[in-house]
Image 1 (cartoon, rainbow, N blue to C red):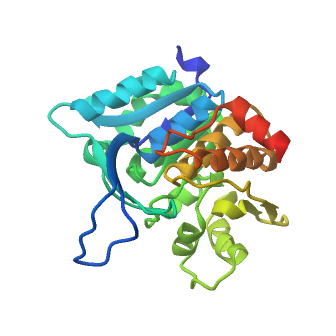
Image 2: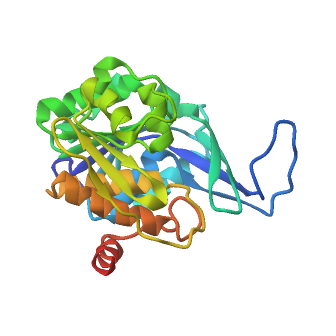
Image 3: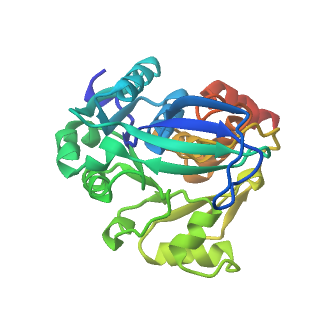
Length: 308
């Protein structure tokens, strides 16, 4: 694969998910017996990159991982998924990131992330990938990677005329300069409320307007089983209904949405149609366990759209 063949570049976090199944959220100081434990590939960036690749996009990564067994797990995954890892740096003597995940009986989850080597990703790593970024159509990132790296990548994307897509998870303070570089923001509802600074009872449109005023071009809010909503300045909101599914677990649903959205935008879909593709893909992703287990192909997503 060469740089010109990459449609989507992901400034990526890589974590190994350490997943325990428990009955309900833990109270402070409480111990619960887990019914199962498993390790699986994770990291919002890696997950979104896999989702985009399964949706037919050619994908390249900019990432920093450990030179441990978990790092080698990532390289093996990206090779299987056909993702270009040439700009993945293995940091000698450092550990890869991990995410400790508790999955509850209703399929919901809580996650604690230790980014490991990923916390060292910086603008120099992005500059080394300038050729790949300059030739792509979409650059995506999440807030699991250092904002200095994302800002550098988005600046290159803007110079090249590529779209920028940010999944603001976890919901951390964001530099104003980065907001102005974001073409499409994909928060879930709690993330939107946190980033807007408005009280919990504020409406989606009011919360989205705060971010649009900061310079974001479009806000696509994921609403779980209720679907998603699009907000843009000077345009009426667009709401897309959810696809009812039997939920096994919701790990990676937001990442699937972001990756599928990036893939649809890269193949030339307009934003409203792209969010319908992403909405269908995210719904399919919750029907199997682990972040990647239910992550669908382009063909499966197309069938879901036709049958809905």
